[in-house]
Length: 241
Image 1 (cartoon, rainbow, N blue to C red):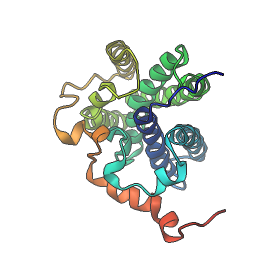
Image 2 (image 1 turned 135 degrees about the horizontal axis):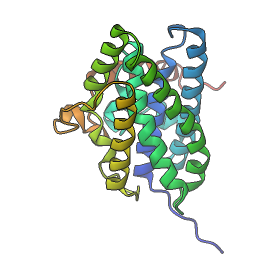
Image 3 (image 1 turned 30 degrees about the vertical axis):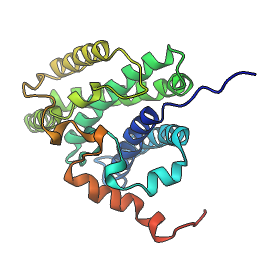
């Protein structure tokens, strides 16, 4: 009889929370995106992330309870993904940073033998599109008009301080963190250079406001987002669709 491989719940929650929270943030663009094509693109990316979140959270427990009944401090998502959408450039900068990281992470996990390998093998194909979408918009905005260039520059700098947390250790997630970080810096740096932008020079972590999401410490906008996300479920406990 083959023994069941235990699921590293801490890692499943961390990755699942990343996908869940960013999915909700992207869903907030419904009805507000600059053009109809982006309504569809951002909605599709949000649905991809929601699908990933469901698989990951179900590996750690009941997906509905974990998504809708936990308090703020029980969420372990990166602070990067909970940042408000801001203008379109801000959303694209967030997507560039996170999708590049997620694509590199899933590519590595897909080649391994961990319990995350089957999910990563499927999800890496989805995330490749997320990454390409973010890169193309970064190039379009950065190398566009003076206004779009300036907005993209400000967005990249504003979110830079949240990027270091992506490469902090997570219990149960065995990856080459140094190699991932080096590859991420090379990739993001190349995209920004081609977009006539530069890598921001500020710190990428340090203060609790930029690196403690994995420990359950979140930025102020997260509480408001969580209240909105959980409102319906908490208002009608036990309801089924």
